[in-house]
Amino acid sequence: MTKLTVCLGLMIMSVSLLAQSPQKFSYQAVVRDSDGKLIQNHNVGIRITVIQGSSTGSAVYTETHSAVTNINGLVTIEIGGGVTIDDFSAIDWTNGPYFLKTETDPTGGVTYTISGISQFLSVPYALYALNSGYSPPVMNTVTLTSSQTWTVPSNVTKIKVELWGASGGGGGAGAYSYSYSYNLNNGGYGGSGGFAQDEMNVAGNQQLNVIIGLPGTAGINAHWTSPGYWIGDTDGGNGGDSWLEGIKAAGGTGGKRGSFSPATIDGDAGTNNIGPVTGYSDVARENILDVYQGLERSYIGDRVLTSKPGTGGSLSNPYSLIIIPTSGEGGCAIITFFE
Figure 1 (cartoon, rainbow, N blue to C red):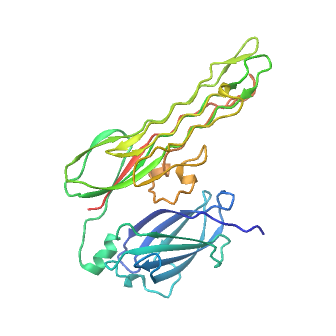
Figure 2: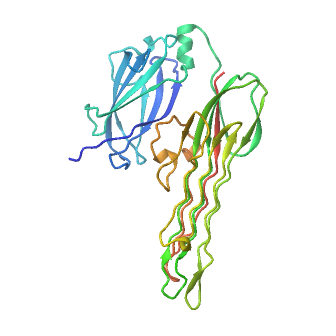
C-alpha cells in the first residue's frame, strides 16, 4: 500500500458552548496525500492535544477521533467530544496562553504521521467566562461583498479583518497561428485572489473605507471565418484588489487568450498582499481553499471561500462543442467583532 501523507489545515475553530456538558469547538481541516490530491471519502484518525504555556508546554487535555473526509477532502470534528479520559471543562482558559496540537493518521488508524501546532489567537469567550465570571458580548461577524463606507458598531473596540481579492477571468480560446494550418489553443484560467488578515483596534461608530475587488471579466473565444481563420479571441480580465484601510488582498490576473502563445497560459494569483497574515494559491486554477496555506479562514456562505478563478475557453473545430470562458469571482471581506 502506498504510504499517504497529508497537509492538514485549520479552517474553522469556533466555540459553541452548549447548555449541558461538554463544551465543544468545531474543527474542520482539508486532508491531502503526498501528491497534493484530496483524500476523499476516506477514514482518518485524529488526535487533539491542548497545550498550556508554550508550544512545548504541558498537555492539559487530549482526545482522539475517527472521522471520514467528504468529497472535498474536508473532515469535521468537535473538540471536546472525542474519546478521552480528561475533563475538557476543567481547562482554565484564564491561565493561558494555550496551543492546539493536531496529529493525523491518513489511513484511519492511530499511527499519527502528520502533526501541527498553533496558538489560540483569542481566548474562547464563553469558556473564559466560566472560569473568570466575566461575560463579554458574543462575537458577531459581518460579510461584505461590495465597496462601501462601513461603520463600526457603537460597542465594538476590536475587530479581525479577513480579505480576499477578486479572481481573474478565463481567457478565450483561439489559434496561435493564423493560417490554414491553425493551431487551436485553449484560453488560460484566471488567477485566484489573494488573502490578507489583520486585527485592528477601533472606536465605536468609526467609519472604515472598504473596497471590494470586482471579478475579472470572461474573455471571448475566437470565431471561425472563411477561408479558415480563427479571429477575435480576448484575454480574461484582471480581478480587482480588496482593501480595508491599510490591509490589502490582491486580485488575480486574467487567463491569456489562445492566440497569445503556443501554450495555454493561466493567470497569476494575487501575491502582492498587505497584512500580518497573507496567503495566495501557488497552483493555477485553484482558490485558497484548495491549496494548503496554514491559515485560519472563515466560511462565506455556500461559496466556502473566495476567490474561484474563471475557466478558460476551448475550441476544437467549427462543428464541435465549444466551451465558453467564465468570469472570476468577486472579492470579499469578513469582519469579526472581538469586543
